[in-house]
Length: 311
Picture 1 (cartoon, one colour):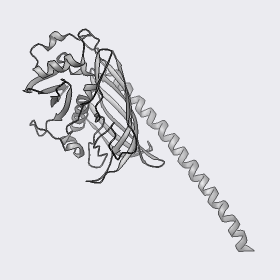
Picture 2 (picture 1 turned 90 degrees about the vertical axis):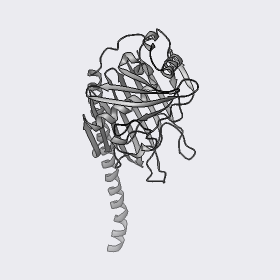
Picture 3 (picture 1 turned 180 degrees about the vertical axis):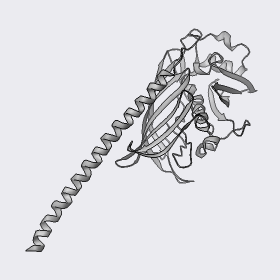
């Protein structure tokens, strides 16, 4: 009799326990999402507060006089004389991160949205990576008013990685802004503080300064005049770190391909390359991003991205 009573109670206990666990997980998800949303809004409020007026307000090709030949060809290919300058952008992305160790691929689905201001340069990338069913990692990658921010949190509650400051982290984040500027190319004009130097028939060095941070990168251009790759300098010298995607802040990033069909929108030819730059690791303990917003042969989902430019 007693054993029969125990057998009948076990399913009830298990059912009640499962219900409690479900409610707790649901509560953690909801609370984490709310808490993370508040953090995102605070970051973007700081980003908006750092915004400065873009001058001049329209593109003037006369400022290209004296620029290296491939740089002039690029701007004439993607811009129109007299068009409005881009002051900011909003983006949404879906795709996969390759989080594999060594030669082992391990693709994880992600979604994200990003807000950008071109002057003073800054951005906030807000991502959600599906690490395992029911356990997303939320990530902030940002450059705001000269400060770099990288924060990854399980469920938006439990910090996995947090790095912020005005040193190497800020330098790495400004580098990301620089690489992604092909999506809003007026930010690369000399009038916006970018200094161009000749490097070859189809390449040029570009230097961007913000406060005490100075970034120099090598841009190469294809036969159409569009940006093909962007490579970072390292250790104070100019070299191609094409395999630095899994490196640290000081080794960021490798060549980022922008080649692909260019679609003209409002006078801008926007890069639609199969490997669009979005995110990269600051630490060997975080995401190792081999490529984003593209679909390799074995990736589980087709990527997409949408960009809205503000003038």
